Each structure stands twice: as C-alpha cells, then as structure tokens.
Length: 81
Image 1 (cartoon, helix red, strand yellow):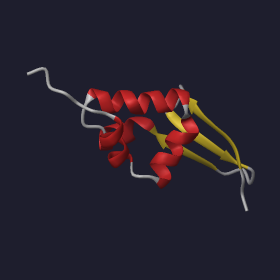
Image 2 (spheres, one colour):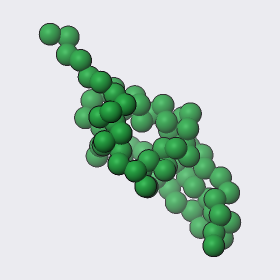
Image 3 (cartoon, one colour):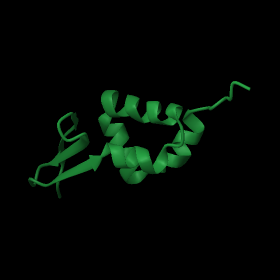
C-alpha cells in the first residue's frame, strides 16, 4: 500500500502535486479545475485560497469530493443590482 509523503503547490507547473512512498505522483492541474468548476470570481478565489493555504484539502476535494457542490455552499455571489 502506498502512503502519501507530500502534497504541495508547484508554482512552476501550476499543479498541486501529491507524492507517494512507492514513487508515484499525482499532479492536479489547478487551472483546468478552475475552468471546469468555478463560475465566478468568488469561486475562483475560494479555490485559490485552498491551493495556496491547504493543498491537501484541495486535492482531497478534487479527487474525492464534489467541488461544484462545495463552491456553491462555500461562496455566495450577490449582485450589485
């Protein structure tokens, strides 16, 4: 069984990278995720916060959770009208 060794955001590749004890790696393309699930700047900001401050939670959300549902509940968009 492989164990997670590290999880960090790589500024050069713009990916959250997970490294495992067996030498394997998962790289999550954060731009592709934002383009797919974020509908507005508030949702993109929430994802950016997770990427920079909690990359493990971001990876768990993308790989095991429902990012669209999370973003709808975590962010509230209010029109200026």
